[in-house]
Length: 358
Image (cartoon, rainbow, N blue to C red; front, top):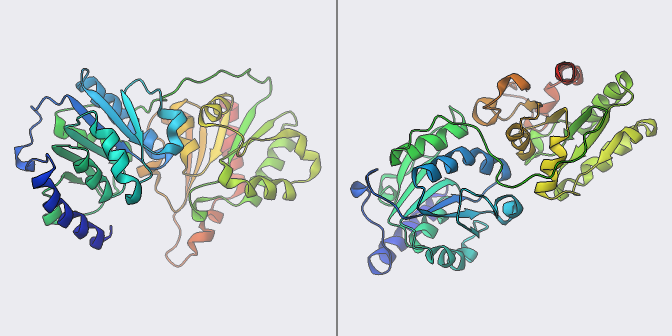
């Protein structure tokens, strides 16, 4: 959290709100207020949006007649544009240069309440005020300075419990007591023909290098899986930003194994990706968006955690079908290489155990 930006937004809002804004004092907030128009922010990564779906569903159930606008990342457009829990969507890239026109789009729906589930402080607060909101709910892992708390009803939630639970906790301010932590898929999924052979998915990419299991490890895993089950198929999935990973994978993998591999990296839309994951017997992945899509689809996963904490971002439902391999690096270890702590044989055992149970 950049204090300089926070101070700038605070100074600007002190000038703007008395003249043009509708923000009320946080002390006047009550769960008894009947909100007729609500704007929900989920402008970050795919996995973050999936974590937010239990809270979004609970908000809709609590306010069945309210107009709900979602502020989303355009990257998630195909996923959210027909989401039945919301009435309208606007797309924002978290950049201040694009804030005003998108805030004015949201303002058309006359929102009274902003619920910021995932976005970037402080520009999300600026957006909510300029869209005409009266109150802002936000949970954060940062301690908000007292002078900025005049704008938001904030819940300081350090990374201890699961992200999904932290989102359900913040809507508790609205009198919503939801224990339903299941993620849901906001778009329809086309069913693909099921293969007679087992399909194992490999998600090799992640948001940062330190969250990626080495490509060479995926190659060794593929060889061992195919050697033990020659009819097994492996599907490589990932975004168009990860095209170098399958190139490296095929360069390292002996050609005799190539016929068992289908490369889908950069070739699927989000709805297509969901259809492909649905065909898998198990997905091997780090802490990244497709992990959470697979969990929502109730597809078994083997998830690899070293620099991330699975208690915070790992599977939170159907725990009997998910295997988490979690290693904690030593303080002096190179974080970029720490995923090497997870061995191929550990992952192989987990995948084989999952296939056995299918």
